Image (cartoon, rainbow, N blue to C red; front, side, top):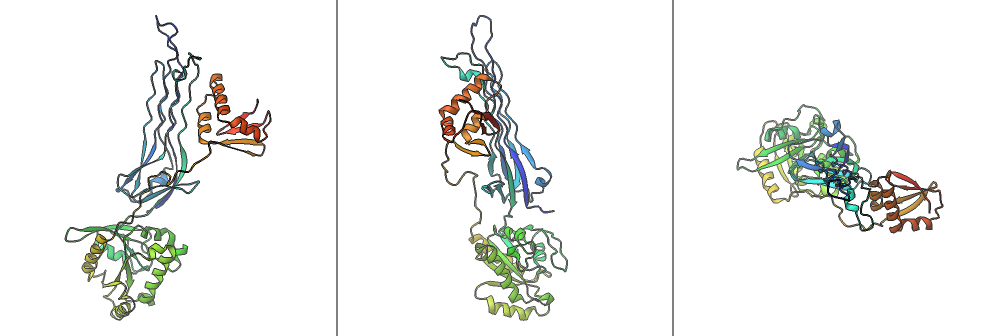
Amino acid sequence: MFFDQAKIYVKGGDGGNGCVAMRREKYVPEGGPWGGDGGRGGDVIFRADEGLRTLVDFRYKRHYKAARGRHGEGKNMHGASGGDLIIRAPVGTLIRDDDTGELLADLVKNGQEVVIARGGRGGRGNARFATPHNKAPKMAEKGEPGEERWLNMELKLLADAGLAGFPNAGKSTLISRVSAARPKIADYPFTTISPNLGVVRVEDERSFVMADIPGLIEGAHAGSGLGHDFLKHLERTRLLIHVIDTAGSGGRDPVDDFLVINRELSLYSPELGRMPQVIAANKMDLAGAADNLLRLKEAYGLDYEIFPVSAATGAGLDKLIYRVAELIEKLPAKMRETTGQPVAHRAEPRFSVHREEGIYYVKGKEIERHVAMTDMENEEAVERLQWIIKRMGIEDELKSEGIKVGDTVNIGKFEFEFFE
């Protein structure tokens, strides 16, 4: 079964907690703090793998978490970093944030890697908080939580040439003749219900990848049939081979068929409508095909190269394939690579405060990280967090918003009661 869409959850590893420890050795009076830092959590990394063809693996496993960092220990020993989680995905996969729709990565090269969810940094041990005024701190940081998000994954096949045309035009037979692909073939419409890829090798050692896209129907651009599911796979190709049932089987008119399919391509994507095409006038071994070939040449011969072929017998396929190989060499690969980083830096405020249903919400990556890494059971750590909140100006901003003693303040996953 061919799967080209999936929704999964990923989470970077949490950082390890810092350690609270004091040096206690004979002949070392007042040894001081000796707690090590926690290790960094592992990243969730996607790697493009040309050996994969579908997203079927993500239908059976939807949650992926990287390893967390180890906690710090006494004797100033730092915890080990958590291992990265490598997730293999097919070449041609687009990865978007499910909440924002932002494109995070476009995997277009074999071996390409993109960090999608970063691991949290390890918490600092108490040895890192020693100062001239506090030589024996009894606090340490908790590890920073790793990034987490839901992802939408979409696979767009990467092929050099794509076969387009109505159902039963002979696309599957054609690709089975010129490559090792073996799609299901029968004499009725919609035999092919999923895309097929085949490598076409020319005798002069050239080769290219051909995609057999299931037949399109009128209204495909608006989602009729499975239009949206199939048209997207043509966007990555360099050249379209428009397969026409020249014999007009089932009472179809090949001249009108060409117009209808091209109209659907343009309505779905203007860029797709402008893509270079050659016409494979198929089924030339059947009655009526010769007359319709003349009509095709009169209508489109000046604008498109037309190749009379018979996929059933193999007649004319060599000339078509050689010409396609020549054209593909001249056309640039239609790939774009996205590193996963924002296209442009977006300046964000250090924090923001808003009131909703009687609760004051404080938002901001910096303050939310400080809160998440504070050990709320440690009085010294809580006092440090209060100092940070005051130094950042959050307390003054809350007062300007009208907060009163006893009101609730929400920061990240924690709620606090406000007091002077």
